[in-house]
Image 1 (tube, rainbow, N blue to C red):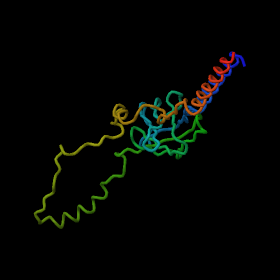
Image 2 (image 1 turned 120 degrees about the vertical axis):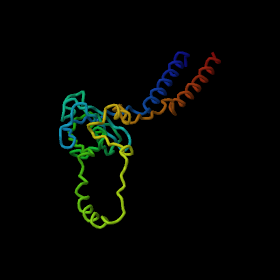
Image 3 (image 1 turned 180 degrees about the vertical axis):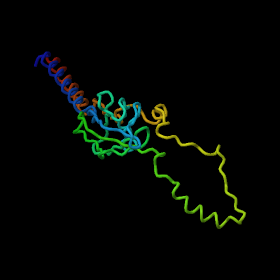
Image 4 (image 1 turned 45 degrees about the horizontal axis):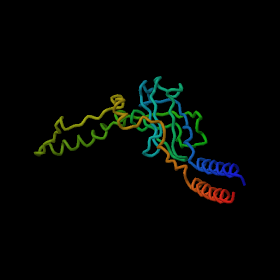
Length: 219
C-alpha cells in the first residue's frame, strides 16, 4: 500500500470520528409557542404598557408588554412566546398578579412556532370581596355588652400601617426587578462533541500511523 493511500485512509478516519462526535451533541432548543388574546384587569381592558409574564412552576417561560389596550399578541411584536419542558403547566401573571386563563395551558413542543389564543383576566386585591359586611353584626352586639366596662379600643398608629399597592400602581421597573426579560426557557446543557467517537478516531489514527511506518520501513 502506497503512502498516499495510507494518508487518505487516515484523513477519512479523522473526518468520520469528528462528524460522529458532532452528531451526538445535543440539538438546539425548539421554537416557543406564540400566544395572543384578550387581557383584562378586574374585568376591564388592561391598558397599554401592562406586563404579561409566563412561568412554568418557578421558572420564567416568557414575557411581553401590551401595546393595544385590552389585547396582546395582535401584532407580531407583542405576542407572548412561551417555552418550557414538555407537559409543563404554565401560569400567567398580569402586572405581577396571577391571572385566570380562558384555558389551562400546557406546553407541548409539537406546537412550537404555532399561534394559540389564551385570554387572561387578573383580579387585583382592591377589587376582592369587601370585608365590611362581616363587621356590622359583631360591632353592635359587643358595643352593648361592654359599654359600661373599662375596655378601651386599641388604635394602630398610621405610621405602622404599610400601604398595599394596587395593580395600577405597580410600575414596570418594579415588575422587571422580579421577572427576567428573557423569553427563552432555562438554557440547555450541551455535551462536549469530543466523546467516545473522537477517542475512537484518535486510536484509529495511531493504528494507521503504525501501519504506515511499518510499510515505509520495508521500502
